Image (cartoon, rainbow, N blue to C red; front, side, top):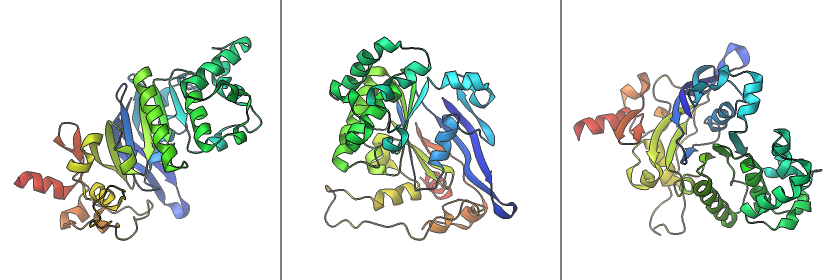
Length: 317
């Protein structure tokens, strides 16, 4: 899957326009995890809605096997949903509370005519086993399970159709830290077993860098840096990415290290600065940053950044 020059705008009051995504270019590779990280309101979930064909881009294309998803007919979109499935932040809100787990798990397969009613119990047992839950859970209701157990059911349901792409929108943010780790380990294991691609939306850079193959850092609708997950801690160059790293807490961190907060608030997406969107909060801001919008430039293989200061440092290196 490939997103090319995606722009998503919404009409706002007094004739204004809210730009949620601005010239987003991203690629999802087979069997790999693309992490998208950024503050609340940066456009992550809006991008995901377009990936899921719940919204169409204002400009640009999202290509799936070379086909523009926005050009698909209503029937083609419905059929294509088998290939791209989603795990939501709050499974309790995405489940029908009156349905038992056996029905929640098998509903997607029944909808697409891939399962007979007589096969429901065996399939539910298989899916529960896949996410390391006991078979007798199929007769429970969602409210009779813990948050971590419900999220495992949500993952099993999403993978029941054997999709090519699994989209996780803040899938661990509502869970305890100890449970987050087991859910991530489960996702990583299932990805290796099924060779499924993942888009993982998150605001926790420390969490996402532990398993994502590639990370896109998003700020105010813009992708400001794309970097291999393993390189984030040591090779991130964009001032915003570095600010996110400086603001994160770890029990393993040096006791003398100070947690740095990002000064001031992000501008409104209704009033995005003319130049670099991060200019007003950046300690390296130059005159050029306020007048010209930086574009993503390759720094190293698989590593891009949109920053005039970084480009200047590279030129003088």
